[in-house]
Length: 290
Image 1 (cartoon, rainbow, N blue to C red):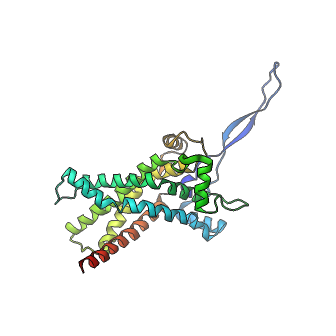
Image 2: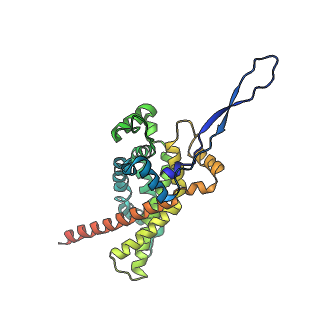
Image 3: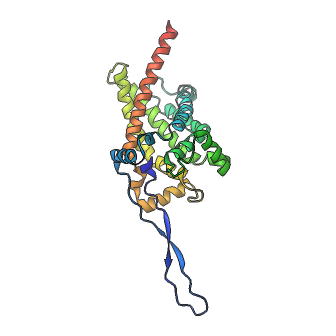
């Protein structure tokens, strides 16, 4: 996440040379000039090494409690409701049950992904703030996630807790389709056409493809979301303004900053999530049959 916010140019002011004016006194007029930023983090390994050396190994787990809160809220909605919503859309669209039902699955992924954000957005805001908080002489910006919720609500109001909700809806809906729908479709293709048994090998293969797809389609939205949610109030007029200014200053490559660590995170997350999910389903199914 730090590689995503790296590149924002702080503004410094310099004094402009005084102009000769006989009707007014000489004045030094400060003008804003983008400050040159030192590139601190280079790549996945370089970022981990730099953070560990400068701030300690525990810093790598900053915002862990907020991240766990986020995943509990998001996954219970976007994953827990997926099959139910998919069945509902299937009854409406009446797609061929023998086919892959791509349209039904995409609609279900978009619906559950967007709903998860609208309900659990405050957990995402706190997670981003925790991870981006800089250390000072008094320690972290927030002592706990509870204090973070209270501070953001007190200083920025209810809207502060849902800051960046709309770009996050787009991001999470896209990621949900890439992760859940891609996994669902790839798994069925492996079972139907590659005749792979429904075991961990199949689940692992489908999870890796889902993680790659999620990284490719979600990285631009994820970078903009992180920049906007972590920016000071008034820096950007909105998420679109943030994206336009970021592209103008840093180029299109800025939208894929942190691609390698994001890929590593999403692939590992998908592998653990789907294998655990499938094994849990198997245990529940076997118990219900007995």
